[in-house]
Image (cartoon, rainbow, N blue to C red; front, top):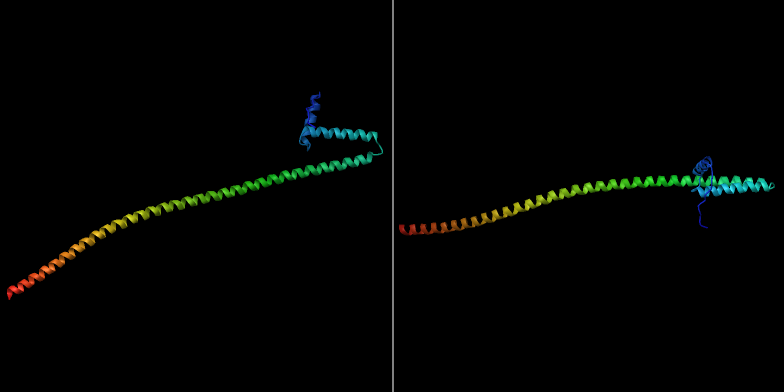
Length: 168
């Protein structure tokens, strides 16, 4: 059955008392609180009308109150447990975020190191190429010198033979 709004005329003191009692109760809304009040009223009427069952009704009321108190206590425990679980989860998430931040910083430091090493490698490679060019040039010059020395040695040997032939 769908719920419909209830409109009644009552003094400010009665409204205030009703609102305070409804807020202090363990009910989720004022409609449930009002339903409980009406049930209590009906039980009171029944007790007055049926006096032989009065003790049984009072016993049922006691058990009903205990059940309501137990349910309220359980609800409070569940809310507390949920809040503790949420706090633990927030702590775990913060810890993971801190680890992510540290790993990100470490990764950046390693990337910076890689960049420095790459630059050093490239510079060494350029120097090696320059040295290779200088070595090639020196080898060509040495080859020319060797050829010149060989030619001079042959020319010297020829001149020596010619001198020896001229002497003879």
